[in-house]
Image (cartoon, rainbow, N blue to C red; front, side, top):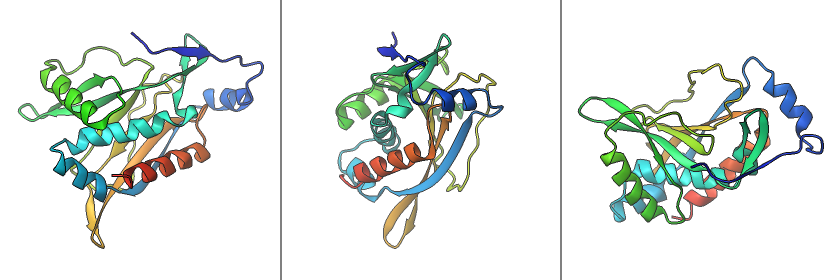
Length: 209
């Protein structure tokens, strides 16, 4: 069951022209990579015996939910704004070395989310449970590489406006742990200023641990 949303009146929506321009682009999404300090989060998950990966999924999706532009989608040709977005992430099966795509509802508490997400991920037997809905953020951790750039496969569906979040292997610098993070978003809804707002929210939240 999808989350609630409201349909946007394009006749009065200030972004209507920008949306139309980018919606008809050959490549309507753009991707930005930046670095964040995860030292405090790393210590927090160790202290509380939580998964760093699942904690990062929570942190990223919590911050993305704060940015309205990340919650816009195309549904049946119409532009809609979801009240909140849930999570979807890749989860490696260590025996087969293949990943599952796991869907977990967003929660208010990071500890409860991590416990629930691990339970759902461990119990899910299939790699894919079906097509992802519009009401998720897609997260794909890549903890083996400290990358400086990343790209994604393109489904060819111009109305696929689901943001994608990636992060790589953290490394030590001046006594702190630094990690690359990437966000890919649909330009019909998200501009560089909104990426900046997301980065600010993420840095602030990571400093609270």
